[in-house]
Length: 147
Image 1: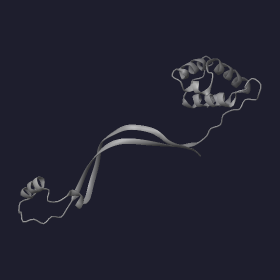
Image 2: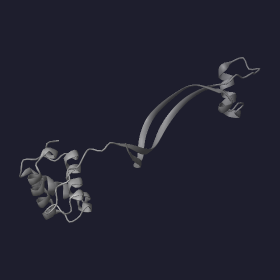
Image 3: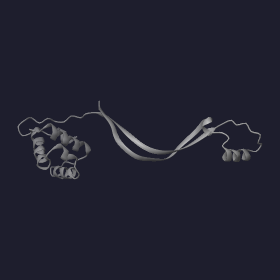
Image 4: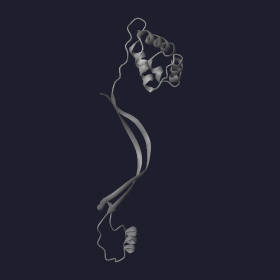
């Protein structure tokens, strides 16, 4: 990332610009803040993507006394994010059951099963399944662990 290679002097100027627009780190997460920061950074020919925005947030957090102390340059951290997903998934399953019957015709046996439930499907063996119509209801961050 180009922004991380800037000199202490240039990072100090960026911090000054950030402090004019942002009071505390929570302001970075408010609606519209990213656009304002991006507009300011575009004045000095920097395009803000997610990585650059994260860099600026951490730069701001790590350097509360940027005017008098050396600038702490943020380093890349590695994380594993576990996301919990709630979904509805339609499943088509095929179950086989062995049935003994005096009926000779399959259609008669089928009608008998449909009317009188002579056997429960779960007493058989699942031989195939097919998932379809998957719909995500909700997602949320479940856990974040630093590597």
